[in-house]
Length: 112
Length: 108
Image 1 (cartoon, chains in turn yellow, cyan):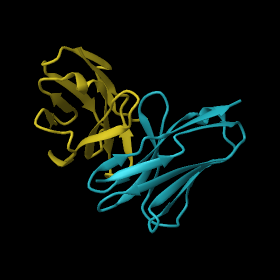
Image 2 (cartoon, each protein chain N blue to C red):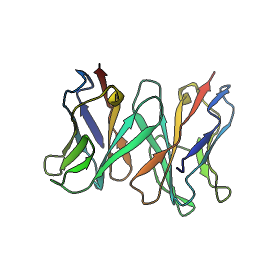
Image 3 (cartoon, rainbow over the protein chains, first blue to last red):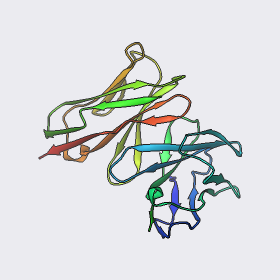
Image 4 (tube, chains in turn red, blue):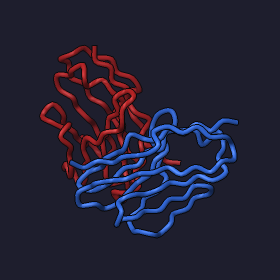
């Protein structure tokens, strides 16, 4: 069964560093999303991406964040100048129809 | 501000019990209500509801939406220990807004 994959599974970085989180969505899906979940808190929407551009973004998704689909398979989330409060599980998801989303296993980002 | 509220936040039942999980929402330009099950890591999709009064069913799980009263329920009948998880409700309007989840523990 096709699935969304994410790498790395765990990333440790120092405050102020840039990180890139990678996702490979399901191959025939057209809609892509990033979410984060701070430990013990609810899932928060960051951004959705369709047709090579951002379709929606939340207030969390400020200038520190960017997304890119550099080739036909990868979907990346870049966080510039990481802060301690960026520590969270980051989930990528993809969808064929902008409704039923399939989530990846997540990348746990730890900022020290 | 859009919000999704779930109740109860935590629930402990015994195998075989039936549970009802509640979700109320205030979502601008509402399009749909989604339910997910989150076990150890990533949420897995359960249901998407767009129309009032039409029950969605999958095995022992079922869900219904009331767009007038702005709520949805998720029912699980004959619960099993494998149903233990956090159940998330999300409203989709301008973007996706998740509730805090209901942590369900099913005891043998």
